[in-house]
Image (tube, rainbow, N blue to C red; front, side, top):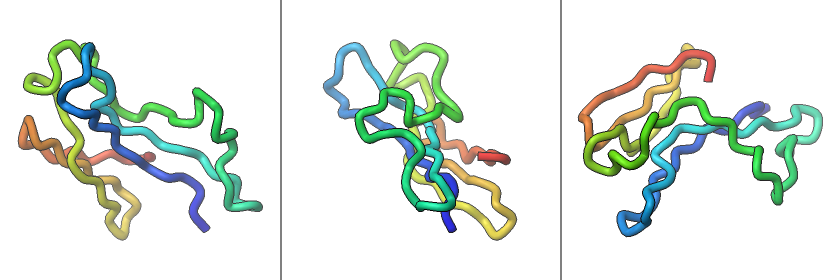
Length: 91
């Protein structure tokens, strides 16, 4: 059963000041299959990776484009602005 959900947040380009540009996870209760936080919670998304200064975004920061897990449980995240692939363990 799914215990965590990983999500990326890449906001629209017209947002001022920039917000988002992060990798977050949402924890699920294994007995119910539901998120542990309410849908109205402002702390449901736990930041795994974020930029130190979103004022540099979107051109001088990582911008999550896609995520995928391999069969070893590692999370791969691509950034389309930096052309990087991040490997994140324990996400």
